[in-house]
Image (cartoon, rainbow, N blue to C red; front, side):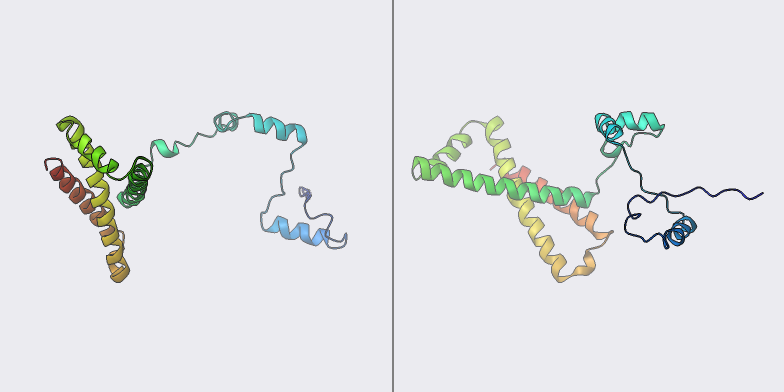
Length: 181
């Protein structure tokens, strides 16, 4: 007894293939294990949109992916993100100080920095650390990228985490030292 093979509906290409070629295409699709395209009705498509990811996974019995909650960024990625953040902070700080001088007159930025510096250790030290960390980290990151440009052999999975940790550590120690100046 010969079993009937399931028919494959190819909604997307039925109109473009001549009726004589359809059986050939269907056999080719079946032999390669390709399944037909799913076509949703308007009602089922709207119902699908109403469900969130967690509800859909519960309905199918599949687990919800924990993604970011368990993923640990590599040190190289953290270093790259920190380099970008410090660059943005430096740009906004320079723009802010320049804008302050343009609006309020020359010397306003200097007066603001002197005021922050005179507020005592609890205010001045974190402000000095924040500014100096951005400067030293971003500058150190630039030197590291120049080194990678000229010595690409150091851009590998072993040396990148080492240089990232060295950059983070050196910037933190130097910035901590500037808090007491």
